[in-house]
Amino acid sequence: MQTSLPLSENTAPVLRVLLSGASGLVGTEVLKRLLATGQTVEVVAPTRKPLAMQSVRLTNPVYEGKNAGRSTDSGLKRSLGAMKADVWICALGTTMSKAGNQAAFVAVDRDLVLKFASLARSLGARHAILVSSVGASPKSGNFYLRVKAEAERGLAEQNFPRVDILRPGVLLGDRSEKRPGEQVARALAPFYNPLLLGPLQRYRAIEGAAVAAAAVQLANTGGSGWFVHEYASLRRLADY
Image 1 (tube, rainbow, N blue to C red):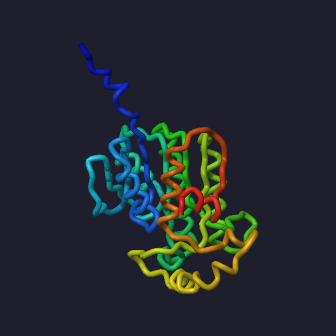
Image 2: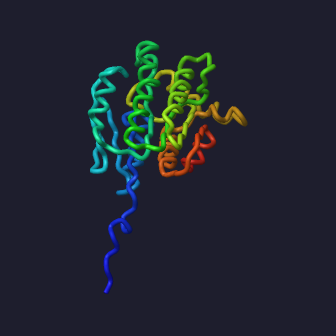
Image 3: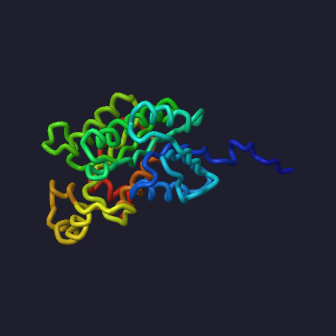
């Protein structure tokens, strides 16, 4: 007579993902792909406004706070409670025009990112996947790229066993908000992408969906270490 296997042998382990920036171009696509992977993924996606997407495997706590100060910090902690996470994926980002000034930009692209990193570690996450930007460097003459580098450097201090930094160029895809600079770059991408060869290939524009696919692929990768992924690596991971 046959007997049923124990539940632990019948059921694949659940991957618990904390997703920051779920309402943006890359984050929305990450969320779609995670929820489409089957019953073995559970996603916690804190946002300031409720997400339109719903699923029995999605928890969408709404937190308060207009900046990355104490109100946001406490709001995040209250919204996450005693939840657990294995992997943290961060696709947070704003623009200077939307932020209004440099301080407000830093509050999101560096400070809020690092608050989420700290919270992810406190929830048990051992793997961090951060969407940054090609050219990120603390020595860059570009303010945006220096802030991105500061976020990367701050992430290193959180001691995640594995960190994957994604550094795409201009992101292609439909956004809910208008970004004039990106719109121009997207229109020109078909012309300048083929001209960027060799070391310059890293600056090619890439679909937000491809970056999201790479992030989801990495979320299912084990091991430890610090890894940086630019255009060619992102393409391979996304299998585009």
